[in-house]
Length: 377
Ligand code: IPM
Ligand code: MN
Image (cartoon, rainbow, N blue to C red; front, top):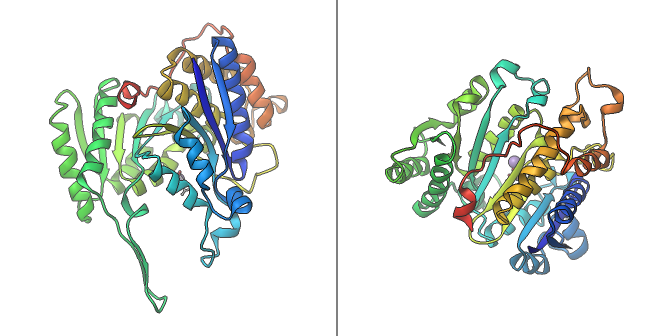
């Protein structure tokens, strides 16, 4: 197949990890005889420096016509404590999500057995955890009206959902659940919020079309607790933009490290794939960032946007094999990891590239995103 992929490195470690994501895609193309054409585009602080805006029209135009996007991260510490700066890196990300109609953000929480010891949660609680989050991505308080009073003493962000926004993501979640353990947990705060009551009412209506899938509702505070108390009790979780942002950072600890978590943002047309970790300026330029989240995002890209199941599975198997061989980046190493097995970003990327196609005799596991693929394309 011929495919055009936009690499969107963005800021901080985004540049370092997408470079490795690109290398694994090149290896897959060579091995499975595909033509992948790569082009770069700019976003975030990087774009502000180059063009004065966080998402130049040129970047957006490239993305509208490509087959898939591999994205790094946006953000820069200079904006974090300075509310006077009106042009901000995150605006680029939010605008991109909205403009490309990327309303469903899939965040699979898949724990590789090799990393059972890397989490701060007890191994016996974690073992076998496999959760698929559907975070709504283009609504909620992220996109509701923002107001600051004239005297500067009051500010508000409108938390708003429209029925159709809840319906479309709920359908995606139920469809995916059908190919997994047939359970959906919908997370809201319906005991307090009107927008959550609409969310719950809508999910209940959609659920009628999926009588074979078990639906439960949880309040977000309870869900936050249950996630670390009993992660295996979750299969598919569907929730709004803000709750999904917070809960998936928490859930990343089930997978050992933020550095392991990939995500897929899909919706109207083109799919965008990105690690859930941010730009991480504290480690930028040190070469120690974990590239596996970007590499696993590339695996999601192959699976969901290109329908390349074998290729995606081969890539995930290569990650698994690299971990089995004992290789770790510093975020997933433990005191027992031998020094020569602790790799930097590029070394880990190369290790995975070299392991693609290697026969390790183990089963290939997938990130288990289910039939979602068929329903996006
Ligand atoms: C994420 C990030 C973004 C979000 C930030 C960078 C705006 O935390 O993708 O989870 O809040 O959505
Ligand atoms: Mn986040």
